[in-house]
Every structure is written in structure tokens, then in C-alpha cells.
Length: 247
Image 1 (cartoon, rainbow, N blue to C red):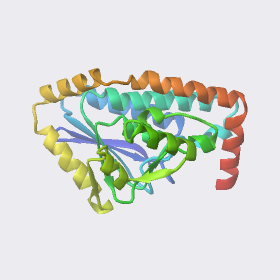
Image 2 (image 1 turned 90 degrees about the vertical axis):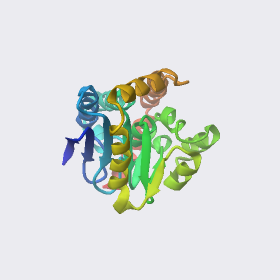
Image 3 (image 1 turned 180 degrees about the horizontal axis):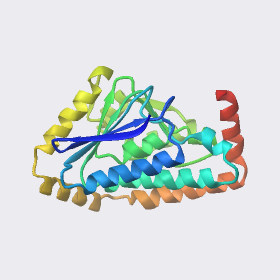
């Protein structure tokens, strides 16, 4: 349980496993950030595959941890941890392939939206339930996956979409059966790992350099509204209702 990784023939595989739904605690987000950055800094690593075990890829932050913690330490920690993890995926010196199954919600969108390549199982769904949680965030990353007006509707309605729809938009490379997801991600990873690592690392840096949106600053701007909503009491009300419903 937790976070683990392996490295084999230039391919690093990072596995997230936080039962029951891969809602990461504060420490989990920071550990993920450190792991991805460290692997990118390792010259033996040519590409990173990010995947998860369990029912879904990622359910965002651990709301129960947040509500069980006195004061605002967990709230601030979750915001900073998400920021660090999203940035680590984006700034990883080598390409990051996200292999998504089941649900990909909230913070999961931040990870996937900042990845270089996405492969998904045919049961994968993607969404931002933040409005229903009294928060905002990761629309920056959702906007990298779907067109502008689709993104806005998804945020306002807190609705999810399928991997097939993302494949239609071109943001998901391949949609496969759940049992073939890992093999498909590793197949793509091997194709990248076989190329010159010097060229691939340069390609990653150059592609980030021509990005039209500064994803770190854009996401930080969104987070400011989350803090405002918390000061207004909206965050606590929504999170308390979520915890009571899930107990």
C-alpha cells in the first residue's frame, strides 16, 4: 500500500496504491512529487509510466484526512502537495505516460493533464467534482484534455466523461481493455525508451518551452479561489457533507 516504483531497461514504473479509492493523503502527494522528479533526474531512466492499482486511477485528495485534522494544516498541505505533484509530472525531465483505469477525478486530472501521453482502459472516466466539494482547481489541466466549452460545462456540472470521448479529442492516445492497459502503456514506453535519451530529454524541455499556458501559475491562480471559498465556509460545508455521506 502507498507508492512504489521499479526501473527496467530505461522504463520507470510508478504505482499508486492507496485503498480504497486512491485518494492521496498530504504525504502521498509530496512522495509522488519527489519520486517522479527523482526518476526524471536519473540518467538511467528514459521514460516514466504512472499507473495505479485498485478501483480507479485517482480520486483526488483525501477529504476524510482533511476534515479529521485540526486547523488548516491538511488543507494547505493538500493544496501544496497537489501543486508539487502536478508540477513534477510536467517538469519531469523525461516523458511521463499516464495509464488510467476506473475513475480519474480532481487531483487525478491534474496528473493526467500534465502527462505527456495518456493511455486509458475502456472503463476509465474523467472529471472534476470540485464545485460539489466547495473548491476549485485543475481546470487548467482539464483544458489540456478537452475543448474550452466542454471543459466549462464539465466544471459547472461536475460531470464525468469517458476515455472514448477523450480519444475522440485526441488527448488519449489509446483506449484498450482493462486487462491490456499496463502492457499497452509499457509498449508505448518501450518505443520511447529505444530512442536517443539525449534527444528525448531535449524534446521534453522544448515542448514545455513552447506551451501556450504556464500550467503552474494558472493552477496556482485557481487555488486562490479555493482558499477564498474555504474562508467563506463553503469548503467545510461541502467536505463535511461528503464525509457524512460516505460513512
